[in-house]
Length: 457
Image 1 (cartoon, rainbow, N blue to C red):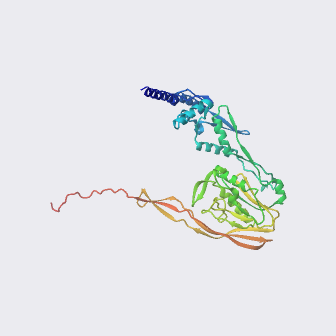
Image 2: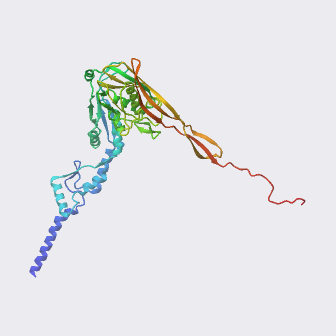
Image 3: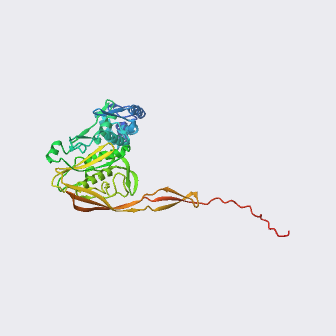
């Protein structure tokens, strides 16, 4: 009997000890040693911690940080990119200390937090798309492509090289996010790296390039600001490019992808025979102007395609359409020395020329031969609002053309070469005619009535 009592007492003592050891698991507050960004929240209830986080959230939403490069300054606010303290996610992290896992893991974490401390970082969330758009706007303002040393088409003098610069957006992103969550940070310096030109004045002088071999000019509308910006950017990219003897120049490789990330803007371009908005509209005017300068310099054309429709800035057979990764314009240097492409924008004019070491006594003439007009088709479309028999021209069509382009080379006035450059076809624009299908209203005649009348009655 005594032995049985001792067993019961021992069991009770063991249970009491076990309950005492496991009692921390029932603690209704944040465990000791837990901090949130250095603020001790141990011993505080869940609701109280949440109220603290909501207060921080409100203060943080009013954050604004200045971003600068030299004298250029921008401002970013937390609200602009939906940057907000995530109170719910942070609270779950704080409350989960000592409450995740099996009981012995929970006890271990509780005692470690009390002994060594446990720091919980504040969680944040933001709108990645809004931040990316903001960085893209800043990049457009900061980035400047480098400029090679060139010879001016307008003055004939040497234009010195000019370094460019590039905003490192991926390096700026974490700096901004850190600044928005740090009350003591008021401004951020933009990480900008220099972009060095490939050709300096000394390089240009060593090549011996000094003579203007050809020049061609086209006109554009400067009021179309996006298209003008694309023309300027593409012209700057090809300006000063040297092509050595035997080398082939690729327009696409030199100008690069026509994307907003590279500074190009949205403007009208021809796609599948229609003018539609697209990034890089206007670049084809640069390639077409260059094509004509190449023809007049008597250089061999390696690759070239015409547009699907006639253009206003060059004649038939004188255009060169380009589309990155699809259609390219290429020519090669068949001379004995290096040549350089020059491209300058002056007001509403784009000038492109080819310079070399020495000028020949040859002259080049480009002719359009065998020109054939393709009349537009007439497409009839039914119109439910027009009466039967009525017609109306909804869109006046334009003719298309077939043309053969020929290059004639003369030396001392004598023809030495005549070559067919291309046979191009430009599609017509159909005439759209609306045709009425609506029945006209009928007036009911007032004839004899329904009664039948007999003579003599």
